[in-house]
Image 1 (cartoon, rainbow, N blue to C red):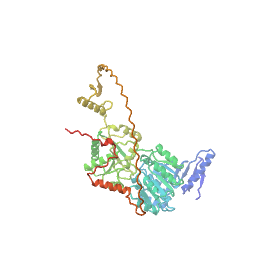
Image 2: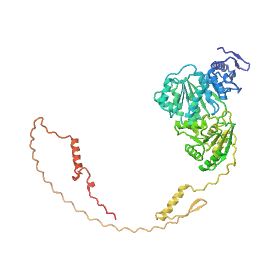
Image 3: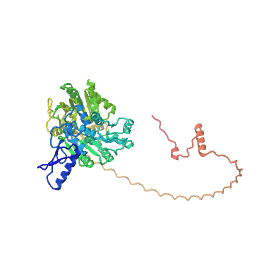
Image 4: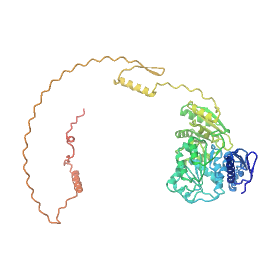
Length: 582
């Protein structure tokens, strides 16, 4: 298709009929190269997709519709059926680059619509071609089973006008069912890294036909220890593939992964990383240090919550998830739990009960903090202050989604002051208190160096003194909680030992008498010669093992016959006197 390029005075170009995004990028690239060769200022380009700079990043935030992004008619029809008309910022910036077959680095937190940012253009690209057996065309990696299942739901929702095969490879499902899907040919393969490598090692899956590789929630994979698996998978797919990389944060390990496996990526960043949603009301509630005090405070908050429809309670540890779940059940709350040690059936059942409203509360660990698409959550309760401030943003992001309002309440103790300060520094403002703020920390009991161990040693020494086993009688006093020992008294001088009497001289030993010479032994008589036996009448001797077995059996049957002790050393055969017990 012809593309009209008209230079402008401000060293710019105007593209009016660029219906194909790939043509647009080729034109802009050629112009940039010519400008750089002439050492002229870099140009800007305007298209019907928006305004882009030399890196392809959007520079204007004018509202647009999905029809302006270059998606196919089938995809636009499915999007219109869901009721969406305006793309989110991450979708508006990422979709044109994905359609142009560029590598994309997307920085966006959950709840910004980044799943559709790669789902919609992938459906458009997959309309041409077909899959082969055991050789999927596209691969999407997710850190958890729940996120993988949600991506599958997106492909089913937006791909209802396409005849594409979508397969889900996650743990907790039999290999046989997954092998059957792979054998039919898969257009979109959604998997967790561990189960994907299991199929590769079994020889049931080939990754040599991958055209598009999507790595979602990369920072979460880093936290879960999946980076070595990601590196291995990236080496198994073709180097000519298109890579779409999405992450909420960019730690150094993620930056190294991007520079290693992405080729000249387009960076799309829609908002400040880890910024809190303004539609969420955030509150702090003071609580005691003890666990039973925190559980009691949590129950009071749930009972007195305003317009509570459903809520998620987040804990730092899986053990606390089970304890809080049992406590709420015991006090009559309709609650389910979700953590990493649950099998797939139990996790799916718990999420379904919470989504359908059968359960009002969901107690979860951070495995559910990212990516779970439950749009109607009204409250989030942080039973524990998260250790990482970014996790707080992801936790409270479960509420206030899709334009709704939400409430996030966090229990704070005196031990959480440092973590709370890091969270408030990250979000850029102080979180207000509900009720009385947390006062000054009560003074802890002073202990001497060594703490309980010194007290334990003191108790042992007292017991030793009473039993007469003490080494010395030491007096110790305690002043203001600090042990002060009395000075030791000087030891009395030891009396000198009496001199030993000299030993008497030993008498000289008598000389030994020489031994008498032994008499010569008489010569042995010659043995008589054996008579020669005729051939064929030789005596049959039992085999050694047979003879030994027969002799052992005879000894076992005869209890009165003494056993042969010739193989034992002599000192074991000496009699031993046993003293009679009084």
